[in-house]
Amino acid sequence: MQTVDVVVIGAGPAGTVAASYLKNQGYNVTILEKEKFPRFQIGESLLPCCMEHLEESGLLEAVKSRNFQKKTGAAFMRGQKRCEFLFSEQFTKGWEWTWQVKRADFDLTLAEATQAKGVDVKFECEVLKVTCSADSQHIEYKDIDGNLYEIQSRFIIDSSGYGRVLPRLFNLSKPSAFSPRGAIFSHLEDKNRTETTSNNIFVHSFDNNKSWIWAIPFSDGSTSVGIVGDREKITEMAENGGEAYKTFIREFEDLAGRFKDSELKFEPRHILGYSIGVTKMFGEGFVLSGNSTEFLDPIFSSGVTFATASGLLSAKMTHKHLQGETVDWENEYEKVIQRGINVFRSYVTGWYSGHFQTIVFTDQINNDIKKQICSVLAGYVWDQSNPFVKKHDTILPTLAKVIKMEEKNLKSKLKGATE
Image 1 (cartoon, one colour):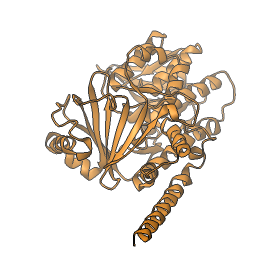
Image 2 (cartoon, rainbow, N blue to C red; image 1 turned 90 degrees about the vertical axis):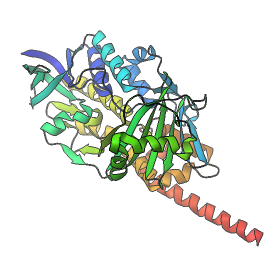
Image 3 (cartoon, one colour; image 1 turned 180 degrees about the vertical axis):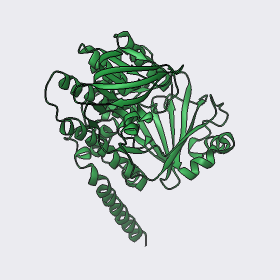
């Protein structure tokens, strides 16, 4: 039976960041990954905040070498309304750019760079059983040929993402409070791309804020295009090989014919009911990170940032624990990660309620407000000096209400002036 210091379940961004950081501290680390890399994954638009996590874990230079598409901001559109956020103009002092990536290439890059550090990454290995205690953790897994193995470690970090290994084995999952939604997506050739549409993710809102489209350009000239909506809408769009999806993205007025004649790189894929949470993020001998903790919604591209943030912090707390120090897992880890999740939860709620659009699509958004919102969109959701972080649960509906009242009063004055 193999014995190591730490077993990390999952070789995605959370797992590789965690494993790389711990390897840098001198630990013997093994990653167990169910799939074979490269493998397709969504979550293709990163946020600047995650650059700090890649840098601290020693993975940033490997990603830089791949020349992924640089991302300098995000643009939101609804009909003729448009609001662009540039990360160079944000409130929080931090990274002013990041990347847009095909996750198959990005995740493989992280995994290979982690392997190069000396981490044992075992692909196509499925975890079957986990037994945890205060001092020793026991894992049973099988390889692609069905051969059974056992591995013992001092600690486990579950970064299994949508596989949610420990939440499933230990019955830790809980339903999301959000309405059930889904997404349908593909990669398309982007012959009509302009310089303006290269460096941003573009989000088009429609259907009275209930649905939206993403367009994420890649460095190879292709673009990821996805539609998010309620389960019924996505299910209908996925029927007959995604014909309704293909027709919609080619004819949707706000896309102005950008993908009218574009060929799809693969047939549309779809996922349903992706939002889910957990009852707790840690237990005796283990901690959860990445999408094993909670996944909200793809609207603000927060998935990879939470993966790298939680992967890094889980590794730091694991290092502290293995050094014999007392770790307050609830206050030092779970509540920290939860604070960031709660901020984005307020913005996801604000998107679907329309409060976010009311603020950003007002005729003249306040520049200071725009900078503060921009920092949230850049992933700096732990910066308590930012009012749009500190007061996240009330500030969007309150500000939206004020804007609507001002717009109503202005219309009344204009009407009175013309009568």
